[in-house]
Length: 266
Image (cartoon, rainbow, N blue to C red):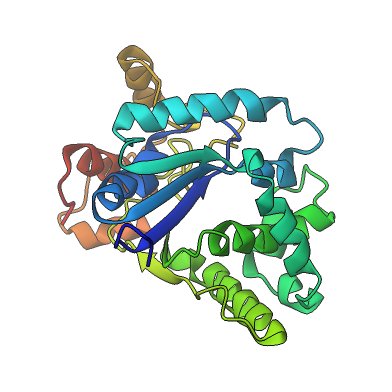
């Protein structure tokens, strides 16, 4: 519990490109609600961006400021939440170093996304400690503020469980109860916005094709052009909505429309 009497929430985003519709519906809409109910810390995770962009970090600085502008544009309020850049708080790196001294290597190697991301980003050399130690830096980000909740999707719960294990082990080794164990704040209704070029994959800022996503700064004519070029299902929509699950190209545009209209596809 913070001095404000509200539970503390921490969340961050990596500055590795332009924010798109998926970021708004999957993350920022939830932040808008959280800032009214909790003591929120929202940060630009620029050190995390280096884990995959270390060979050419030039994109990080500009993306940092563009991202903060997007946050402000959608209504993230510096008067309601604390906004900061990770690298401007060097204590994150110091705590990361201290946690690395007591965390078993096998814990990091078992992180489900470790191998998956290496395969997905096969064009990058990710055989580095920075990439392997990503969960340790993430743990430092969370526990340094003694956050009670971390907003995560269902697919990210295992990452937070590792954070809890690391914090608990640190507390146990040194006999201190210094780091409270954070709990997941699950948003089951968060919209997964899929790629316009591949309805089976999430919209991603790392996709080389800009036509695969609708960026938050795209003007209306460009958005219309991207929608017109989107991969679609040549067959007519099924009479039952449930049948869309097997036809991602058809389901995606319907889902994007429902997200924008703030309604259900059911």
